[in-house]
Image 1 (cartoon, rainbow, N blue to C red):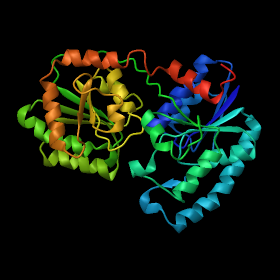
Image 2 (cartoon, rainbow, N blue to C red):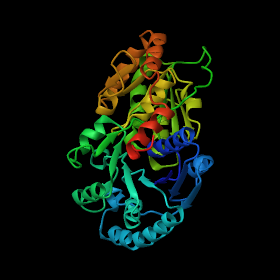
Image 3 (cartoon, rainbow, N blue to C red):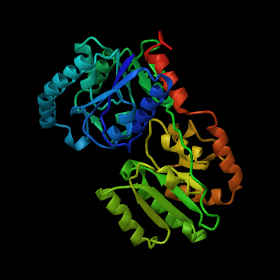
Length: 376
């Protein structure tokens, strides 16, 4: 059996990319004789981390038909048209060389792999991790309805990471059985617990960008320290963006330097997250709350926005708390409330809620049963 994956990202800091890494690893562990190939847009850490499990790979730049809102225009459409033919040609050449049984595009961001697979008569599946109109950080370069009609036509199956995403797309892909839900694996073996004498620490694992909401965490912390001045916020996923600089300036302006630590992007984020007493999510939107599961698997109660991706995983007062993302003061109240709870019980509940769930093995086997039901 030969499977070829198309990745739109080359780093390992995004949910879709980490999902792909776990999937490739799980398939290879379950079926050592299978050959797995991948196409990346460039050489970086994702390629480096997946390489031990791959029989081959290629670096092909794949133009996106999802773009930043400010980039949508005739110039970008023209550039896409100029780049796509070269990308399809290169991809078709690689498909001929590899001759996979199945091709899988691991993103909605680019259709290049799907178009090339159609030309080579190779079965294609689409693993969608995005809902652009809800996330609002990307928009369709062309007409949304027409783009999704192509996704439907170019896919034997459309795989999504949560029931929430399935509900959203069922109106676009109405064919019975076309959409399948597969929960991602999140395999974590947490390191040793932090010292007992450390301050109460809130861990937030997310790439620094407005949708992830680090600014909301800072605003809430500003309120929390009025009642609990020893509270510490650990922000994991720092970068060199303008938004990251604004966060650092806010920390200084609010005189929170002793209450906030920032860790730059790392391929070992759980080594830091486990140092916390509670995990915090401030995202405006997620298709699947991967970071929520990561927090729970680290044995941390998680405070999340009262949104579908949060409600699918968190039970109020059992393994975490829900809050109105538009209200930093409410978030502050939930943090204070959590500090007043029986923290050891909440931590045990967090572990119990993900016990025997989200394993690499089950993820790979469920995925395989969908894309290749005839061959267990």
